[in-house]
Length: 425
Image 1: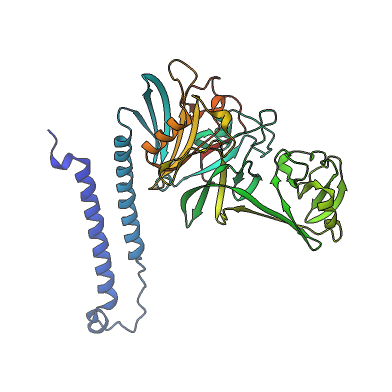
Image 2: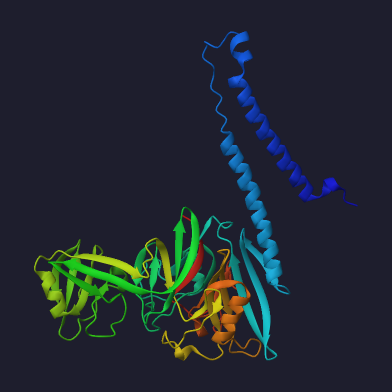
């Protein structure tokens, strides 16, 4: 029979009590040593140099409180996960990161679901961010999620935003470490990852590009960055991540080569994109005035104005908005992804936990979800904001060195990009 002293909770309490006592003794001793009149006068050594004993009791106290607070937070997180996901297989990936496997039934038919929920304050050695498939950040690339995870030293990964199957170029907003790799399409929803004072938080919005080229007394709107051209009237900027050369200019258009903010070439043909610059492609009537002084400044912002955003990954449609189910697939021109399919989703809770979800489908043992079913599921597990990611054949989740769901292609098809939880550099 275990005694009270054998219980780990009691032993931990004793450890904290001892630590607190030590802090109290140190504070009292420091006060006694340096402020006691007996020490200064009766022993008559006040005029002698006294060795300085630097005991930062505030730092010790802060360390003690942080340790206690984080342990409590970890315990609360564990208990919350158990209550939220009953009758599920739950495993610990790392501190503050849980992998949950469960099965739900819709009209009596099964759906396999993999969930990763994370408290990023507990998982402080890791960072959530988008990642391209190419280690060199070339947009025209596709790799398996296992390769992406290993290249980024990640313990968790899920497929990211939509991409052009022929090339791998992401279709939608993608920002990594404050660098915009691709711009938005169709005003679709995107997740912003913000870091402020070491704290991570999230936001969802239908993001638009707010970018411009300034030079020679003109200000030219930039319609997109590293995206396939939709209209000949659009001005598009191609950076080195697009590839070796820019596309042909549109009809009645031109391309301008910019190196170190100076225009060095104009041509309607493909132009080699320099490492220290970019190529502007658009209507000649709009771009011609920039050739007057040949100096140009490229400014990139977003609407809404996410000034302190670090990463952005787009998806669509919304699933949960302001705590309520909200599916706007028609508004985001995503009508083709309806029906019951494999699904991937990302969301966050009111406590700022981040949740990734992969749903298997298109098989008898897991029939997949509709967007409304997925939206209701994301709300049921506490998401106040959530959006759909690329799904179908792209749906794949990686945890602790292996693919944990069952995609149609073993190990998952090669994909363009992913959302990863990687070790901080």
